[in-house]
Amino acid sequence: MGKITLSIDGIKVKANKGQTILKAALAHNIYIPHLCHHADLKPFGGCRLCVVEIEGRKSPIISCGVAVKEGMVVSTESPEIRQARRVATELLVLNHQVDCLECNKSIDCKLQKIISHVGIENGLVERLKRTANNTLAIDDSNPFFYRDPNKCVLCGICVRTCKEINGVDALDLNFRDYWKLSRKYQAGNISLSDIAVKGDAIRIAGFNDKPIAKSTCESCGECLVRCPTGAFISKTSVRTTREVKTTCPYCGTGCGIYLGVRGDRVLSARGDRNSPVNKGRLCVKGRFAYNFVNHPDRLTTPLIRRNGILVEASWDEALDLIATKFRQAQDKYGPQVLGGLSSARVTNEDNYLFQKLMRSLGTNSIDQCARL
Image (cartoon, rainbow, N blue to C red; front, side, top):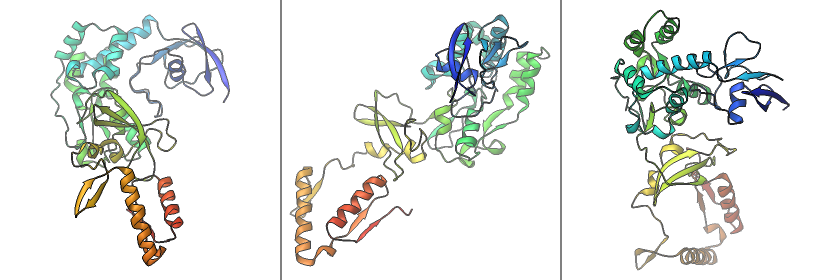
């Protein structure tokens, strides 16, 4: 892919042809505030925070929807841009529940970063917050995560994720009059309090404002990992101390995952974006069904039967016993006495090696449970 050169805030940068201004800036650590943009999704241009000025154009444009051009001169800061961002941020704060110390998304919240970048003072945040009606019910119908409409900034990332990545369409923007009110406010025709009263009607929910559990949601959690605020939060959200790279054990697809560990317990799972198999995406099992690892009854050592009782043994002892029993059975009844039952929870490569092992022992009696 060809490279072009442009200037962003006086800095010469190189970008790929067709790349948006926002992506080019972020790739060179030049921060442009944004909420509705996500690298996995198509440009949306809903939050209006990523506005920039281009030399030769009369008015600011949204950087997430305009491609770079050779010799383009971009400015990310000006009095007009700062005012536009402040208005957009005030509208977001107005209908947002700013209880950051109690929010599980606190240190990862993009809205916090934008408020700090724009420079909205705490006093103004409190005044705006008091005008809003933040009493919408939290949707806890999903067994794995909460949906808190009071912390939603209506960026649409969850809706677009469900549509563009999973093709499920479980979520939608309900009661869309908010956007009309926002435009009227920017034009000076209504006040912030008008939006606080009227604009809180719009929210992310299932079709016809139904709870998540009554929608077509597959509980994959892709909306949760992309949400920029605390609107989607896992019900088992606990900070971990380290991560371990591994492969999901639930099927033979071989999705790459990182398990979040704290002490000797597995507390979270996320997709490996560098994995060629799943590119960071996971199903409901891969993302949420890891608690079996922590179960007190889980076997952690081999068991062999002695005097009719199962007792713990080392791997060498257990494998030697299996080899001895195999040999005794084959010597007495022939190689076809052996049979192998493989698992759908291991990788395809492991299943291939298993069938090779059984055939090397002289039997073709092999089956597996990967037909679910």
